[in-house]
Every structure is written in C-alpha cells, then in structure tokens.
Length: 152
Image 1: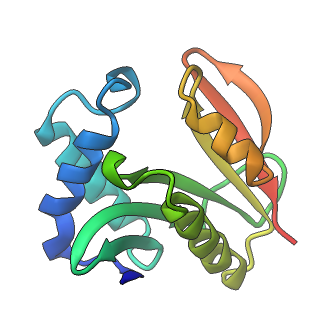
Image 2 (image 1 turned 90 degrees about the vertical axis):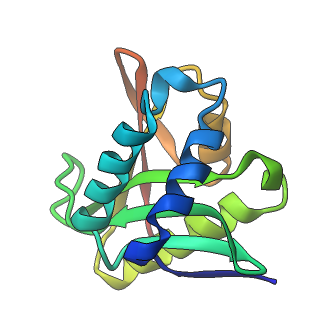
C-alpha cells in the first residue's frame, strides 16, 4: 500500500538513500556526497517542515517532495516552489511522482499559493514529466531550466 505523509526527522537517512539513487546518472544536478545530500535535505525540512512529504510503500520510503509556500517569484506575490521531488528509480513509472506532485500542489493551494516554480536540470528528462503536469519553461540559466505552473 502506497501512502504519503509528512516527513519526520527520523526519515532523513532513508531520504538520503532515495536521493542518492535517484540522481545516479544525473550527478551534475544532485549533491556530490551523502554528507552534502544530508545538509541539503535538512535545509529542505527546515525551510518547509509542513510541506516536506515522503511517500512509502509497505513502510519503505520510496520518494519525497518539498513544497515551499513562502517562495518569492516574479509572477506572483503568492508564489511557492517545489524545491525537490525524487522517486526511487525502482518505483518509477507507477504514478508515484504524479501522486507526490499532486499532493504538493494541493498543499500549496491550501496555503494560498497561485503560482509554483521549480528548477530542473537542463538535460534532465524529468522536464518532460513536468510539462505533462502543466509546467511551462520560463528560461534557461546555466545548467538549469526554470519552470512555472499557475494553480487554479
């Protein structure tokens, strides 16, 4: 059974495991070490403790997302951000990412956010996933693509 719940401090080691596996082959967009990944994920959890969610199957964490309802963006005074979404490679193609994104977007809506921003690696195939979810590219900045979605 798959379920989404708010992340807890004790989830950090498993979140790091999933993060490191998710960025295999895409290392230029991830973190260079487990220590750097730990610092980054701790920052996510501090930045948005109520908006960081894990997805688990049978008690095993298989992905997570961080939705930040207090992120300044040019398109709106009520903007938000998806800072990170990862799904364990062994669980991709099963709708887990879509489930996480829908959960994150619903959370952001509940906080009054009307535009969501995310950044994805220029050559990361995940950009096509975001496009299917309604995100539009708004510019290239070095190795990153900036994408936004207007929430209704």
